[in-house]
Length: 491
Image (cartoon, rainbow, N blue to C red; front, side, top):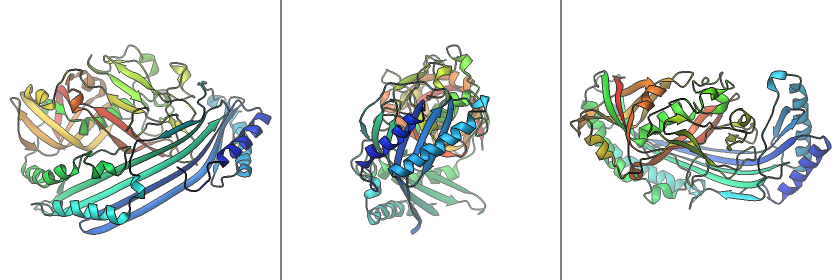
C-alpha cells in the first residue's frame, strides 16, 4: 500500500479533522490521503525516447456547512496540517454560502466501515525493473521493424499505482489500492510521395491488471504484432471506401469508444443537468426523458458499474464515501438511469450510485464515469455469424479518429481497419473509413449482438472532465455488434 507514510497515523489525522469539524458544526466532512505513482516508457525504433516517473502525495478535506461546500488540500500530511485545511475549507464554504445558485445539497449513504480494497493483479507493473521492460519493448519492436513496408515502430508501457485512504463524518473509512497498465505497439509506413503515412497499433486495451497482462498472454500481443506488418502492407494498397450507407459489424476494439462518447458521457447526470457545459458540452439526454427516450433498439442494454474485477473505474467506495454498485442505464433500448454523485442524485433517484472521483489528492472529487458497458446476447453468437449475414458492408476493428458535438448527439468515428464484407465474407481491406450518425439513430440501428465469447472490456486512461481539468481511467465492455444502414465516408 502506501510507500511514504505509516498507515497507523491515518486514525490520528482523522480524529484531528473530525473533532474540529464537530466543533464547527459542519453537516458533512471527508478526508482523503492519497499517493499516486505513474511511469511511462516509450521507445521509438531502437531508441528509448521517454523515461518518465511521477509521484503525487497529499491530503484534502471536503466539507459542507450551511448548504455550502468547501475544499482545501496540501502536501503536508500530519494532524496540524489537516486542522489548517479544515479552516481553509470553512472559509471557502462561507464565501460560497452567499451565492444562491451554488447551494450544495447531498444525499446520504450507508456508512462503510473499515473497507479494504485491492484491484486484482499479481505483479505491480511499476515495481518491474525498467531494464526488463525496455528489453521486452525492444524484442517486440525488432519483430515489427523486420516487416515489409515498415519505416518506423513505436512501443510504450504506461503503469500507475493509486493508494487512497478515505474517511468521513458519516462513519465510512476505507483503504484502497489500484493499479493500471497499458502496453502499446505501433507500426508506421511513409507513403511514396513522402507527404503522408499509414499506421496501425495494437488493440490491447488498458487494464486494471498487473505486468502479467503482457507476460502471461492475457492479451496475445505476440500474435497481433506478427500480423501488423502484413495488415499495414495491405492497408497501404487498399482503396478508400465509397461514401454511402452500409451494414457494419463493429468489433469491441472500436465500439468501446462510441459507447464512451455517445452513452457514457451523455448519461453523466451533472452533464445532463448543464453543469459541464464549459468542458465538452452538455447532453441531449436530459433527466426529463428518463423512462421514455428510445435510446436504442430493444436489444440494447447498457449497465454502469464500478464493481467489476478488472474495470479501470472499479473501487469499493467512491471519493464521496458511497459504496459502488451496478445499475441499469439503458434497458431494452429505453433510457432508465444516469450516473450520479451525492450532489446530483436527488434530481433522479435520491441515491448516489457512487460515481465521484478525484484524480489527485489536491483536486476536488467530481462526478466521473463508471465502467459503462453494452451487454452481450444471451445466445452463443460469434463475430463470424454477424459477418455472414451482411451482404454489403464493413467489419470495423480498432479505434482511430473521432468527433462528437457538444450535446453528445452527432458524431463520427473512424476505424483502424475497415474490412470489406460482400455476401457474408470478408474480401479485403479499405483504408481511412469512418461511420457517421447521431446517437439515437445509430443505436436504434443495432440489429444483432455477439454473445459472451465476443465480449471485451476495453477503455481509456485519459478521459477528461472538469475545470481545472481532471483525467480518469474508465472501462467499457462490448460484444461484437451489427448495425444496419449506417453512413460510411472516407476520411
